[in-house]
Length: 157
Length: 162
Image: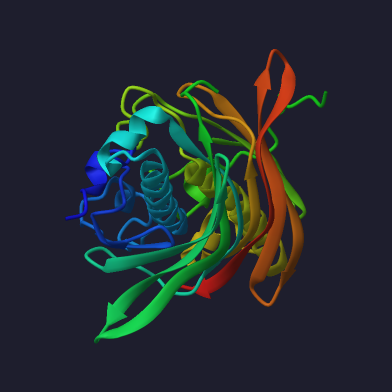
């Protein structure tokens, strides 16, 4: 039984974009999220034409990468995944080559698949893609090359 | 340091951009032409995302900073179209939607907290066949000095018909 994202991630609703982990191990993580009709950003993006903002997709991928980092740190320090977050937060520091290929609308379910490129000291680099299923087929919504996070010891800036 | 008190643009971002609150992260345009744009935004304490990011410790999410840069970048695109096709600035959004298609590189250097003001500066790389690409940065003023918060390279948008 994999823990719930809400117990693992420091982010909380309405800024949590991972509902459930489907697979997680030290190399990759697959998670899913369904956008609700009443998400706070649909009111402004765009009025009368709700589309999930691209940056929210980046955030969903960022949060999945953070989950994977927390899982790896947990393995290393022999802690259950839910308890690791007390050790510090992961700040999103750098991102390259993020492409958007499709649109996501309210009530769509996205699958977020990320793979770890490397994790050394307190720095993590991952790549991945987000897809949705249309009539059973994968349609890639966005993908990226490298998303880097740094684990900080505390909250201060 | 450059003076940034003079307001040249009368149109408000709310009238020009298709995005509307609570997903509008440009408050005032300080400078705008076909090549560059400087705008500012002050994060309010009651923004929707602070409740979840992070509880008890509000920090502006990095992706919201990317969105602010993208919205300023699309202002340059709107200005270019308005000039080329002779449409008033606030009417351009009725004919196009600029979709965020790609981002080449973003780096984050500092955190932004509620009530802080950010200045968003973008430069156009090119605009061709409805596709535009920009580069730029966000800074805040700390004791009158610029402090870079994040920067981007190769952010592109595609114009699509509404």
